[in-house]
Image (cartoon, rainbow, N blue to C red):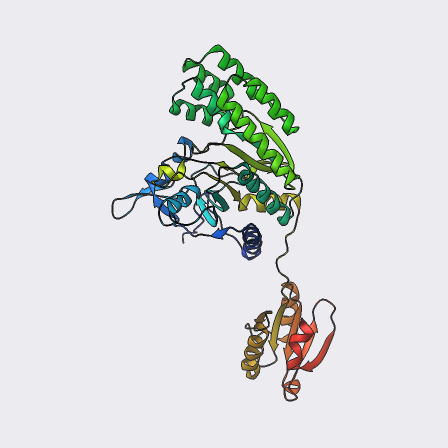
Length: 428
């Protein structure tokens, strides 16, 4: 007989894992509520043309793309932003701005599976659309910081850059946009020598090559000092200087807003997606060499999909990776406290009463299971202990004649006979 396994790169969540995932998801929803982000739900399957438009070669090559039965080219979403941009360009085009939009769900990329990386993975996604001001970028940094604090992760740190620095240099040097994108993707993979060689083939000036070599080395956690050094390095490139000043303003505002996490500015830092136009960032924790989340500014994507010019900034958080980081840091995450109760009828004739009492307790927001395996009381209590129940309600014929049951506290081992109507109060 064939033993079926999950498809490579996919995973199952067992009850405890699923509960932890849902608790993390609940925290992201709470953050969305606190910051005023409204939830939208977009399809998992979108047109290939939409998803590939500005995804970048790396992402395009890893999309789950196929033809549907209508012979249309479609794909599973490799990220949320293209779907959000489509929605804003169409159904929401006449809504007042800014938009603060939130999504959570599964994303699909045909990556090589490894620690913290799956082909189906979970993300929460926040997009602030309609503002080109630095306080919007600062809000996304603050929101990400607030979420990781709420989840209880320790020592998370931001790596921050600005696409406009390199784009400004390349534009002034008249480098073709497709070559710019190739260079950015090489830098995203930290293949700096290959990136510089590609730039050199584009016949840029010696001054440009010298500036780029220096920029690749410019990084540090004294964030305002680093931006000063970047500005000095690129002083002959007007658009790049403007981008650096924009980055400095964002960092100042984020600090003033209470984002006190460690930050490193890297002049040569890039991300794989082509649509970024401004500040970009990723967030990490020590000892886990993968980003827990990342994002940045993309001011031209809505326009690409037929919408009005709409500046935008956003972030996606990898929920699977956050779960892995929690496991590495041994940081538990408790959901809302709900007492767990098992109801044990002593005899088949009391099963209906057990079901009736269980429903009454559930109406008081208690988690209740009825013993349905026909076990004897000792075995049923042993099973309840093993599964970490808080209370057992034992229904016996003698007590029931007096409108009572036995309530056993499975933690303290105390038990009392009490009226059925007192159960809710005593358990809570």
